[in-house]
Image 1 (cartoon, one colour):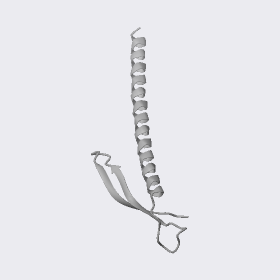
Image 2 (cartoon, helix red, strand yellow):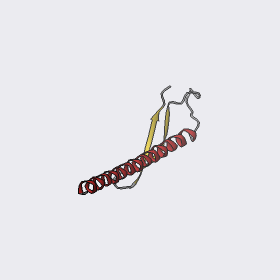
Image 3 (cartoon, rainbow, N blue to C red):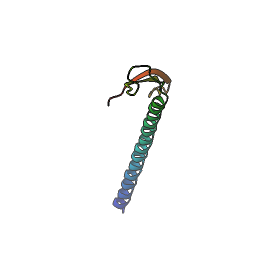
Image 4 (cartoon, rainbow, N blue to C red):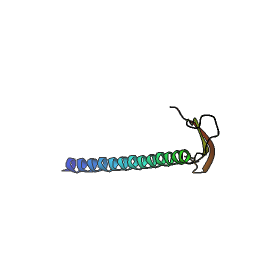
Length: 89
């Protein structure tokens, strides 16, 4: 009888541990996915708000410039940085 109780307690602890691990992985996935979506939206806003270039080649755009807002992963501080992206065709 005591072996059965010990087996049930160990299996319950194992299941609880797996629940915490899976919950942590799901929350990590959601946070990462939200960060990727935020960065993608900022890049698309840079692409859509490009001023008309005054260069000779008006049809070919090679660089995007603007500001990117990010949050520091450890401190949570909001950071702004100038960004320049090179477009490869």
